[in-house]
Image 1 (cartoon, rainbow, N blue to C red):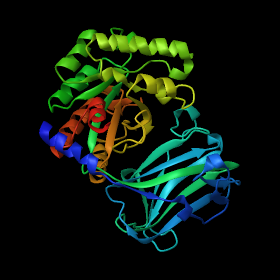
Image 2: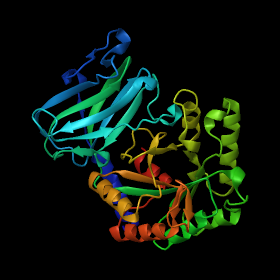
Image 3: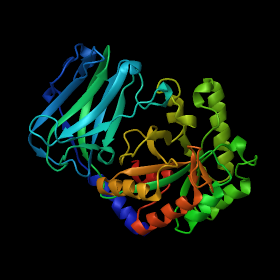
Amino acid sequence: MRTTMAIIFHLFFLVTLQAQEISFAEFKNKWSGRFEKAEGESLKDIYRVKVSDLHEPSYIEKVFTEEVSFNQKFVRVKFKVSNLANLTGIELRLSSDDSGYDNFVSIPVPLFTDIDFNTVQTNSWITYTFTMGEAISHGAPNLDKIKRIGFYIGGKELEIDFSLIEIVESINHSIVSFTFDDGYDDHILAARIMGEYNFPGTAYLMPRQVNKKNYLTTDNIIEMKEKFGWDLSSHHKIPILDFTYSELDNELNYTLGYLNALGSEEEALHFAYPLGKQSRETTLPLIKRTFHSARLAGGGAETLPPADWHMLRTLNVIPALSPQDLIERIRKAEKQGEWLILMFHYLTDEENPTNPLAYNTKKFQEFCQLLYSEGSLVLTVNQVYKAFEK
């Protein structure tokens, strides 16, 4: 494993990263719908895509004058969707063809039927980063020789405003973070297994459940923190959208007070959205005022730095993912300089768990051993925040 000084050296490399902005004025509409500069003084430098027919998606693209490499890079975009319910798909496409669509990669923005689970929400500006490790290949594209960049948009009676697109350098390695939600009693076992490899974790705890049946005890939590170097961070059993503003404020203060008493003042300032539900309009302002970061319950790999510390994406570790599957995804992250936040809930002795939140203990042990052999950099969420947030 890397030494502390080596970690600091590699993370310091971030300060030299460069971003290349592209003008949306250089994009052209290729398919149906309309793409034009938005009118109005307050809409300066805003470009708008209009999609009217569900069966006729829109596509806008820019052709590069010279080939561009997207290896160890990510794309950062700022956009706003007029009505999320009418959006059926949005994805970034990078093509190494002069024309046509034989060899390209697509990187979709995850969309869920539960509106409150989405990073993209109605009529709210979002800065979103597209990670190359999440790219889906069509044909045999070459990321080192990209000739065209574009956005596919599907839906009906829909407008999407764009105000920024940048190509940003990635760091030269990946970071892996283990996160465990809810504070179940088997998490002490996970801590002990990870401790064999000096892997720290982030426990998103629900203080009102501590010492109850099937949950961690106070002694367990102290052992995780003091012996194994885990961070004790904030979570809740009830989705935050179910509270009034004052109720939520009180609950968050209770959680912080509990964790502070355990000596986790700084680590407590990181939050996991219960059931992944959140609202950019109603709950996000309070979450931003209260916490350094907030983690979602899906979305895939994160970029370094993230587009939004309060919309951190995660890789949900489901039973079907083998240790080898996880290692292969981590190798992609290593190649592209991404942050993989792994989300676990339960460990179980059941060989093929039927609970989608469970993961087999022997497979978890095997994964930790393989990860150690890879020499991957494992940090807690708070450690990553301290390294990258300036």
